[in-house]
Image (cartoon, rainbow, N blue to C red; front, side, top):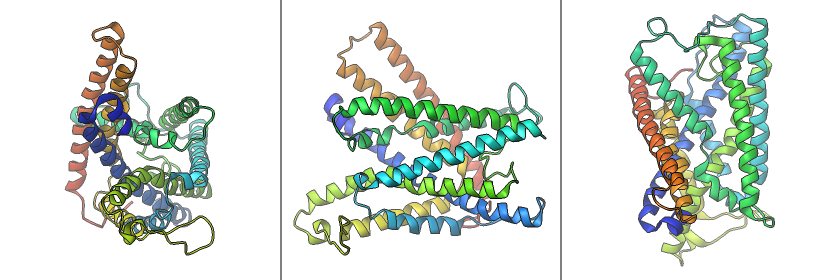
Length: 373
């Protein structure tokens, strides 16, 4: 918000803040859903292994969301992003681990078979889906891709924690290049090998949709890695929310001991603040209840990806670059950037509509607090 305000003026700050914090809150909800599905998959993998692949191993995800929420209440008491380097490193190692396992299992399935039916256009109209379903699902998939790539809402907050020298922007540029390149390689491998393994019946989540049953212990390990990763990722995305509310409260009530006083119950750097304890606990509880109320994995991720993609990943960076470089209006580069921004806006609108349609369809058969994996 400060970066937008300095380059584009105060008029754009509130729109940026709205987009950023709605997306951050939505990400917390999405991560709670995802982590609970992976935790529930641990039970299912062991159940299928012991009772056979045709056994009824359905399990409700609500309990797992509550447990995840309790763990986040504890980790949320870490004061800020500066205290979370170890958690971020652990999350990165976990991410590499489960992505590698998913790629390896897909490759093994492709080589040894049996594999699903594959077609050049994906699911077939009239066979797998109707033409309307094909359009909706394609747009929802674009939303999932946008969500998987988008970290623009925490980019500058992370850059603010990078040590200097060298200059933070130079370090972050290298980190961006490495991060996006590595991410793209894994996404392409998972997407292409996953499709070659399962074809048009590919599950929305390879490691929890039970395209793979064996080796069950490896699938268990991968899902444990997902849960651990999301425990850390949840905190990275929620810390900017915490910081914004706590800074506002400190400015509003600077003399309140409840808001500003720091306690040191343990020896060392860790401090406890009563306002932080109450506010962060309340936030985790609310986000967990919302996750339990709307436990639709791909639809929710698609909607979150759509809402954050155009404003935060395209519009503001483009406008800030144009302002900072003092680019001439209607120059070739200006027209190209504005065309890109408009095209991405159209995609965002279409994906948002498709994701809402998907959630609406899921709600038709939804019983509150009774969602089974």
